[in-house]
Length: 222
Image 1 (cartoon, rainbow, N blue to C red):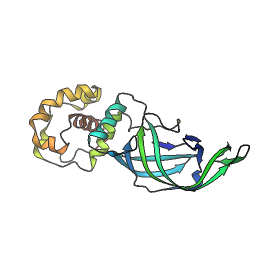
Image 2: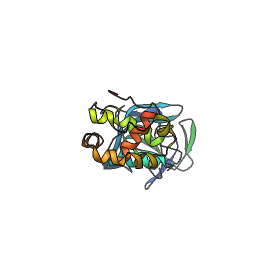
Image 3: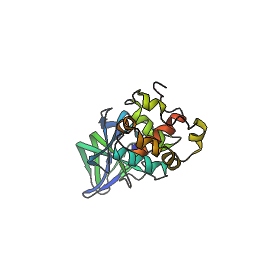
Image 4: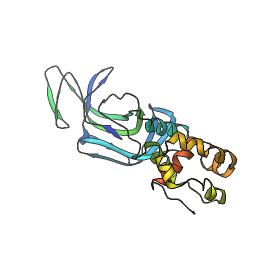
């Protein structure tokens, strides 16, 4: 996710630019959908400012919001990104004033935020900074995201080990996510342990199976 490109953004009170040199952020940021704190989609495990942009990498949760982001991204939806920021120091520029910020010239009237702290990031349909983007891990967006989200919570159970043994790696690689979901639905419905493991979400389980075939997640105990 590129959360901020150093560009100016419009606000109800005027134009604004965040100075990347004065920006701080924790490595473990919550990731929401459209800045809605009730829609927790994931979290970051690496945040850095490099190449003049704020980059955020992390994990999607295996819940309805994370799964929805993964599914939409897998179908090609062009998510942008946005950040929630605490503004701690700003400088007001009058008409005709200029200031070099983030390697570009910012012209007043407007505000230069010289000190800020990033507190969250969000998947959004349209960001204030239109050059941002959110990518769910390639090569298969949904599969990679779900695999990453589920990697830490995979458990080895006999029913899980035996599930879908009839599906070969090659088949899974060539199938669409919808096709995988159709094929695994009966096994998913019949296996309580698998349903519990994946929160009852067939879409996430299908993405996990495809991610395994791509080698994006470890196949514990199998």
